[in-house]
Image (cartoon, rainbow, N blue to C red; front, side, top):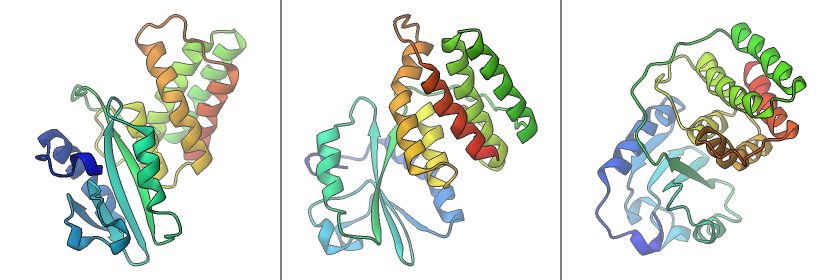
Length: 216
């Protein structure tokens, strides 16, 4: 939460979303605190209240929750500067979806099954059907996450949440995290019928490389 909104009442949906992150961090040995007080934060964060913090010895994470609509990159850059030179603290930005996702439970597929589908993506690319290849690759990325983390909830996730979870679990590199996040908007344009949105072969390969990294 940034300085301009730190005194507003907490939104129930935001609080619920943050609570849904609790088990992930606590299973990794963190103490997870939603809406921390200033007394629970280090002095260098004076004047800034993150939406949540996750702490364990030698490693502390401040979590800033944003929706795609509310994300202000300049504001995030200002907040990020607070953490410069602080190796024991880092900032993580979590993005909420703009709409609720149907509570459909997804099946858990085996790693070989997901990897077999990679061949279908490559065939679509060879045929020049990059839009279909791009969308199938994104589907495989979520299937890959479910395959290697079978104990996570299996409701459909937004693509940003898939990437965020993979990054938090160390299943993809920081470079892959950045590259995938840059493609989320393109993926959403394709899904929602923007016929001018044209993925490239490189875009498809970026997603496929992440799928392989998760599964291999």
